Image (cartoon, rainbow, N blue to C red; front, side, top):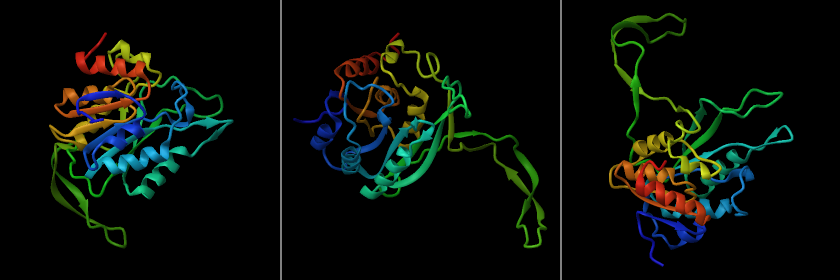
Length: 259
């Protein structure tokens, strides 16, 4: 079997990656079926082999963005995300950043704890990331102001004039609306039980890859990563164990917004 780019395959991602060339992927953006929080047609999540194969197919300087939540069982939070991050380090990845995906309108409530409104986004790199195109946001103030500098051991400091820039690099807590109109306007996408926001995928694609790079999602679900890769002039490659979800992904990639 020859693995073609700009294609979506219905198969086990470990088997697909085993047929892919080493050092062939610039960026992976994916969200795994963690802790059996969703029904994925009985699919067994082979995390360790997925991690090993991801390292093999990722280019030197390439990045894997691993979007993962946590499960609460009998009032106890399972540490699965942290175990996964540590295992990625064992197979050779660097944990370049731990980012937070904050949900603006999460519906999930707990009776005796604060509402859980976030997931982790582990940014894993094979060596030093070769690409970083930082997203910038406006600063609160700009122009020339007196600012404190060189605080001494006694707590005193001098103020000097310094130009404040109009923009700064966005922080690593990214907030997105979820649900129809927030996550996506593609109604067909919600035939999948767990859809992450298109803007989340797009922001990572713009940050860690360039035009013409190959963006991969080994558990592509409804195809959000693939759709946003194509829209932003990247090559894409996707895979899912479910033929039903692959059909949805192909439609979203082919037609863009599918209502």
